[in-house]
Figure 1: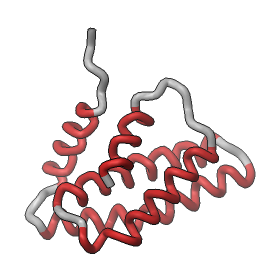
Figure 2: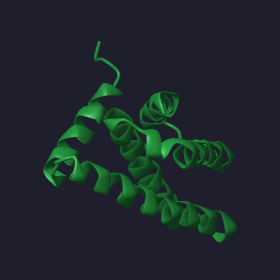
Figure 3: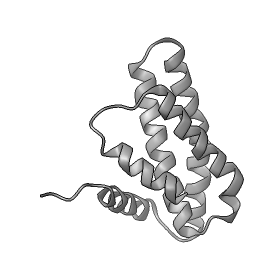
Figure 4: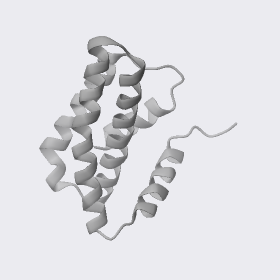
Length: 119
C-alpha cells in the first residue's frame, strides 16, 4: 500500500492529467491490493487505503462528467466500485474510535505530506 500511497501523492501534485490507461492501470493495482490484503491492514494501511480510494474515486467521478462516451462510463464504473471500499475502510476507522472530523483532519495532513516544499 505504501507504493500506491507514494504514487497518489505524485499524481495529486501533477499539473497535467494522466491518461485513461495510466489511471486504469493504477486503479487495477489498487483494487488488487485491496482484495488481496485488506483484512491484514494495520491502522496506517487503512488510513492510506482510504485516502487513496477517496482521491481516485473523486477523480473518477470528475472525469466521468468531463468525458464522453465509453470512457465516461468507465470512469463512472470505477467511482461506483470504489464507493464500497470507501465505506468499508471508513467503518473500520469509526470502529477504531475516529470521527468524521478526525478523518478530515488526517486527510488534510496527508495532502500536505505530498505537497512539494516551497523554495
